[in-house]
Length: 114
Image (cartoon, rainbow, N blue to C red; front, side):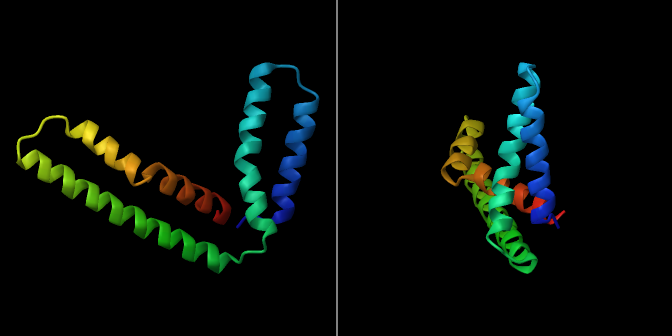
């Protein structure tokens, strides 16, 4: 699991590198890395336990599985009716159910725990 100290050090290193580089692509890369680490730092600063993070991860994975199953069922029902445009319908459902947000949370929790 990531530690508060290790993430803080990574952020300090990123800030130092950012201060001393003039290359725009390098600066964008550093900003993206910082944007990824900032929520990790905030979560670790909150004092949340590893067990709690693992419970959250399990909950989010179960939620994603349930939502994906529901979407698949609805798209399958449309296909049985002979409907075209199931791809667009699937994308709309994924947007409605915030699938990308759930996947992002899972990715963040996995990053913290590994």
